[in-house]
Length: 299
Image (cartoon, rainbow, N blue to C red; front, side, top):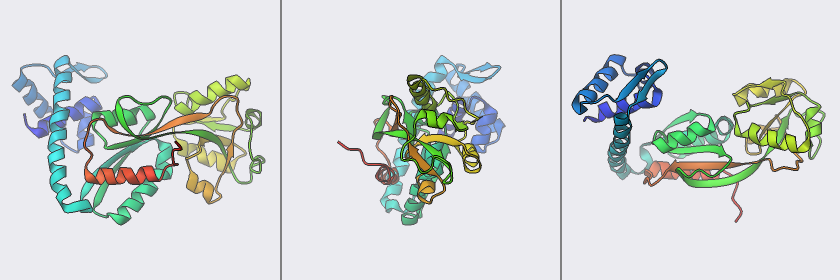
């Protein structure tokens, strides 16, 4: 089995179709289809079940996928160790994070790291929390930073901390001068929120129920950056982690208000890597820089 065939096979398994794998790899669909057919002929089995909504791994395909990840990870490790003989002048760091970290934190760390090590390349994927962890577990990315409501047991944790959410408003908002706000204060103004299937809404809904306050959002979006213009141009607010948009808050573009609540508004932050994997030197150096940029964890 050739490495190219295994890579194409894993891409189809991850994306769910040959067309999607083709777009991701920038390889002709016919080439991917041919490699899959060659693998199935070589192994004398069906690797994918073709369903109306896409291609799903068969039991034999699941077994091959586990083997292929190990083989390709081993091959990549050899290449990495050879390149590391050249120090931090070359390398690739693949990062996945949720959008809250992609607006300020991660790009800032990337830029500073690139300034010090211009030969290192980066790939950044912005994904929902669960997908970040999945990409780390599958070995598709080197480092993941995401929110979680409970510790992940499927990854190695380089950093874990719990941070409260805050209310974000424009600097001229009527509440902007307050040191702390309550849920009744928030309910008096239009709210822009992420959807209910997010960790933020899960924590918020529990806290609102405990306070006996109903908050019905005026705007809901699965993209945080789509909520910010609403907050800037109206008397609206949104809720974010206290670590999100720190640069904008520091520049005075927004005001971050602590929220008084009977229930905890904290969510866990995890920096994740693949369990039992020896990290390439460039990845380890970036991981150290990323953790250093996060709030210190008090013992």
